[in-house]
Length: 312
Image (cartoon, rainbow, N blue to C red; front, side):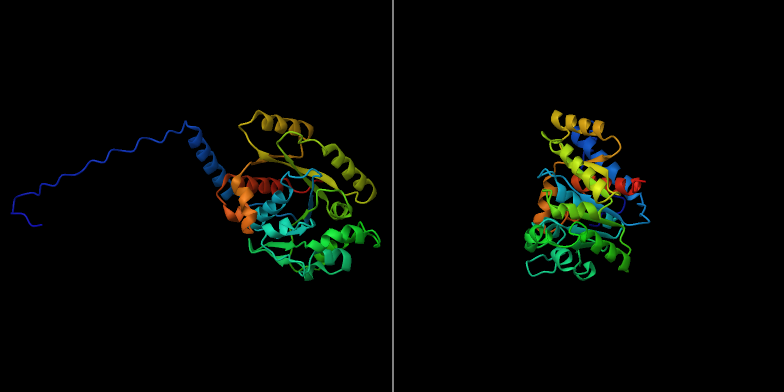
């Protein structure tokens, strides 16, 4: 609009009141600030890669402790950081294969063919769509009968180890980590997993009866170490399903840390809807919702495992 010379337009400017300062004393504000700090700390860190492949068996005879969830999310977190990672799905339910988005219908070549039919692992592994360095040796329903078929086979406890060692020796890809997800029962499949690994990772849920059965698991590991695999050791314990608001979770966490001060990771995995939702989309929580508290906790646990290195 034009105005006569010397006149000014009468423009009234609406004054927008300043937003009230964000109250950092509230629980939500503290949580957001903490999550931001942890993300920045992780983003600034380059994880060390092991010189020799680290082979973990993720085990707990008690069901529902987050064993498969821990396997796939730690694997995805390390692959996201640049590691080459192989997940061996040794559970007939094939939940790890589902979470990693790989094909595992009944006609798919699987870990069953490796253990029972001596198929080379290199012919069977599939690349997960999650991350470039993430691979999976899938499980199919055929694995359910493998326990019976293994009984009559030569070196029945060593079959996975033999196949894995051959694969790692021949592979053009330098794998940094192998995670073996085994069934909750102690049968020949689980024994194969223990014999093939050097490290055992035990997820323990922060709930009532958390330590129930743990002494039996440790006794079984000791027997396998004594008779079948002298290199086997429990190197890592991860607290899962942690709810800091409950006295029970805090009490369980304290007890586990008192019993296993060197093995327990500082990182704890919270109860999280996002972690539970991710497998239904054929994803890990690392790719499903990277910024969620659950994903962040698994990224921290993976970073801690990488920093600790293999036990001497």
